[in-house]
Structures are given as C-alpha cells and as structure tokens.
Image (cartoon, rainbow, N blue to C red; front, side, top):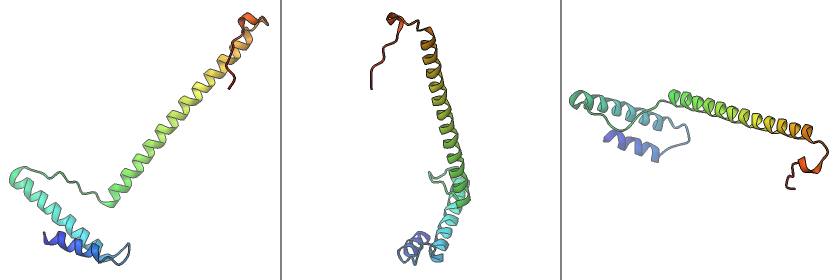
Length: 111
C-alpha cells in the first residue's frame, strides 16, 4: 500500500511530463505488483485481473495494430476498385449491345 501512496504523492507533485520521481514511483509500483502476483500464484494458484505492459510492448502492439488496419484498408480499397471495374465493364457491354432501337436501352435516373 505504501508503494501506491508514494506513487500517488509523486503524481500529485509532478514537475513536468518527464518527472523522474513519477517514473521511479511507477517502476516501484510495477515491481511490487509483479512480486505480489508471483507470490499469490505460488501460494494459491491465483492471478489478478491486471496486466502490466512495458512501453516497448505497447509500441510494438500499436505498430502491429496500425499494420493490420493498413492491410484491412488496402483490402477494402482493392474490393472497391474491383467493383468499380466490373461496373465499368458492364457499362461497356450495355453500350455494345445497343442496336440503336429505343427498346433495348437502359434507362438510368438522373442524379
């Protein structure tokens, strides 16, 4: 509990974004949590619902998520391009089948 209270005090008295006192207190909380969870598991085969991520893992996960999003966007773009191409092809086919008689023309609404 004292570790959490120290972290709270450091955060409340923060002197800028990169205050080393906050970073140190954060690390002490992380270390205490890992020790607690390990002891809890060893004694009772139990875990907490919390997961600690280090900054490197967070950045790696974010990069992977961004890559997956980019791939999904590319796939969607490809599908849209294919749809547009098939629409263009069907327009060309319609025009080539038009024999000049009004009965065979496709009527499209004006937008």
